[in-house]
Image (cartoon, rainbow, N blue to C red; front, side):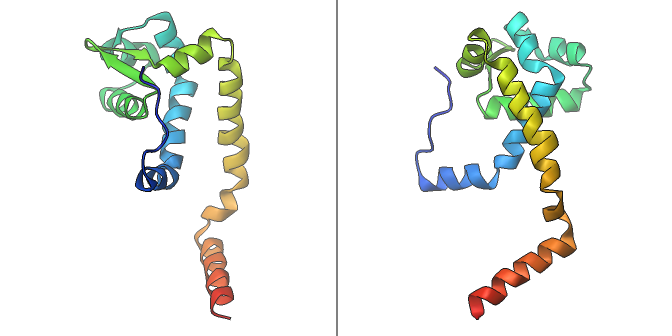
Amino acid sequence: MTDLPPPATARDALTTVLLGHNAFQYMRAAVELGLFELLAREPGASRERIAAELDLQDRAVDILLLGVASLHLVDREDGGYRNSDAVTELINDGHWELVKAVVGFEAYITYAGLAWLFRVGELSEMLAAVRRRRTS
């Protein structure tokens, strides 16, 4: 079984928190491009087949496959790729549309709602306010 186990250490958990936005973006890209559906139809698809079907250039497909494989969303076997057991189960159990909806909600609603956080001036002000509270 290739499902991602729970973090074994506090360091693993911290890494998950610190890099969680990256993991989500790999998942989002794969969902929006249709990678998981492709692998459900064609388990064992080659890198070249995936690139052609998803209309991705070499570097883009390499980055996508490295990301989703490192997250254990897909497995590489015999030179091809297949969905992980967890993704396969979600698809087979009819829950994949819900997963796609949650990914879309997070990408287009939640992330958009956090846009203010990423404006440098406002983020700097927020951090300064936190520091002032700590020292007062």
